[in-house]
Length: 270
Length: 244
Image (cartoon, rainbow over the protein chains, first blue to last red):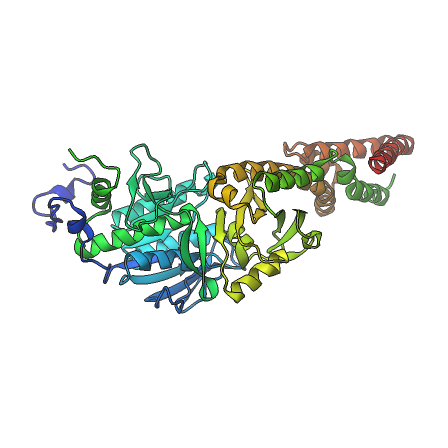
């Protein structure tokens, strides 16, 4: 008699899998020579201005809006769209700066209506999981407890599908989801400007620090701004993960974290 | 008292009660929070805009420094810095606004002029996002060293004060909702009792209306007495407000 879940471990069924070679972990090994080429990276945000000089095009765009007549449902529109605010373009621009050759996907979940935005955000995450996105930048979140369970389930699904979900921590000292979950890469701002310089916080929930104070970014309408916020720290880590994945496509999310923890500026090597 | 008389009295109550019962100085408190935020960040101006959820618009509620003309101005939540803040629930600091004329135009539409720097923070309570507080052109030193957390404290204070204002403003709506519910159920007393039993902030007001309904069953003299007492309270409250 076999308990549930044990059949997968029966010798005749047990899957064989390829394992990433975790050679001596150095920056050169991790992201040396990589531009993120071929890695599928999505920005879940306000849209991305594809023809901004700092963006240079997106591979695919999808807009997800709450259905005005069917509460709880969404309308999904595939195809080019504009950035309604500028924030998504800023995040995409930082990713392009760190990893210029990624395949960039824009998943727009913020629109002209406020009602139902939480539903759109979750549908955006589902779209990313179902469409084989490898790294998602989510510089958004919520502190409302009623989304806790549903977002947690989606973050776990992303984790088990090997999708790295990079989340900006809230700008205020409050719980924020999904940034607080152990299954995601949570990021806050440090005040240095080298785009590849990041720290690890050994006392989470916020795990990584990256540039996010007075950072110059592209914005809506072909413009550029100097901005501050944890929103702009997350895409630095997103870009870096994309570069690591080009060199080591087999790395799973927890292995990616191990690589980042080993290479953070504040790591003391024994 | 007939039902139609009672409804007329309730309508009167609904239109005046919120304003009359609202504790003095809530708007003044919001204004002073905006002032303190401006001074703390040594900024040119500061403003608070409140969400009109039905219209998906932000309405400027108070402004400190700069032009008062911005008060009452409406902007859609679908674009702009304030729009981003209420849509995403995330704070944002722009330390150097673009020289790009299209961006400048968009910002000028919201504020009446183009600031160099903007610090914007959502106004939130545990239950709801109510609007946005913005600080324009803080001194460079304040912009670099001030903590976003500090503006967060002002934002929280303002959100709680605005929540109180809105709770009182909704008292009238609650009463009309009771009447509508009663009309549907055909039993005004039962509907009032059920709403009065709720623990929401408007529950006390519903209880007041319920007592009013009960009085109406004792006879016209009791109803008249209650109405006169209430009218005196309203007259006194209005006069007290005018004197301030």
